[in-house]
Length: 494
Image (tube, rainbow, N blue to C red; front, side, top):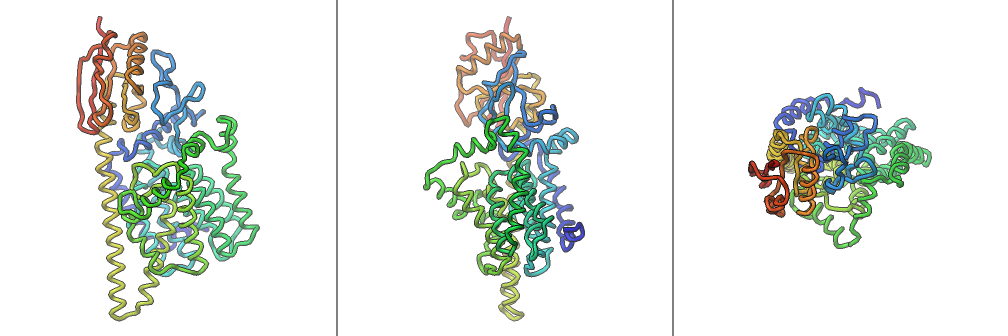
């Protein structure tokens, strides 16, 4: 695929993307995150930027120079003399250079870039497959009628993974497969899997789609070999460092995956058969058009494989429902092919309706469907904006604390305060006994002041009573309505 081929037919929606995306990003409070997951990734990226020679490790927290790894919240695991985040490790490492260069806004470079790349990639894939209508419409649909905008404006690896899979499909799926394109497609799928393990199922689907498009065993074997080659370095590192090629994140996820069929059917119901924010259809109602007039040729089969195989595979293997999200984030890689099917179905339906009254009615219906998608995207942005704002206040309040040590009994607190991590040491007290032990160790280290943060959303302890047998006494109490937080400052008496 030449650069000219890549951008052909997508100039207008891509220009619209540049015009719209950056003001939308500037309207967000970037220190706050929609989900605490992003805060964990930010801590990992901060550490990768701080010591690039060992980018996959996180330093142990210390109290007076002594390791205090036992006081880390559950999304971090102690491994020898260092720590790892229980998250896919590659994305924070890739964002670390931009974080070092631009500060917190730098971590949004890859998600925003991926969103913009998806516009010409969708157009190129539509053109390669011979779908109906101008390719620009497919790029436009990505921008304004799907949850991709939401994930492109958040520090999450879902948009980059979706862009990698869509790029792989654009390179590999053509009437006559080319070895270079197939090999690069395999490498892009390896990248997607390292960003989001569930992209494995999109990789399987793309391998099957190659066969559906008439590719021979040689091309399919080349694709598989390239994918394995792309996964090999990380797999070797995992095997040497963790003792398993799966690594910490995937190994933990598979170990925690529920086996109950009822639970898995519950995931499917939530994602596909409900009308909640976590469901696919409220986030992209325009996608329902794909079901109105399904495409049944080779191109249609290839696209439907890219939609259905991942859905079935992820429902069968996911460890949870994805938590806080807009649309099912684990299924984000199926959004581009589903949008292509929807736009193609709408245009073919319009063509079949002709130029009479039926044609006008169909056109009105398509415009209404597109408008509904735009309204859903607008709601997604407002939700993202409204959620990031209070979480950014938590980060700013914490960053303004003069005290270095911040102790909390809320396991999620350090995630939303992650922007303050370079200047503060976060300690997690799982119970009152742990809090008392932290206080004793701070006392031995001659720490004069520290802050205890509690949330009214969880267990509330009588912290002053816990400190009763120490030198520490309350000198200041501040409250913040975001997540009902209380910041209690303690100072050592004489």
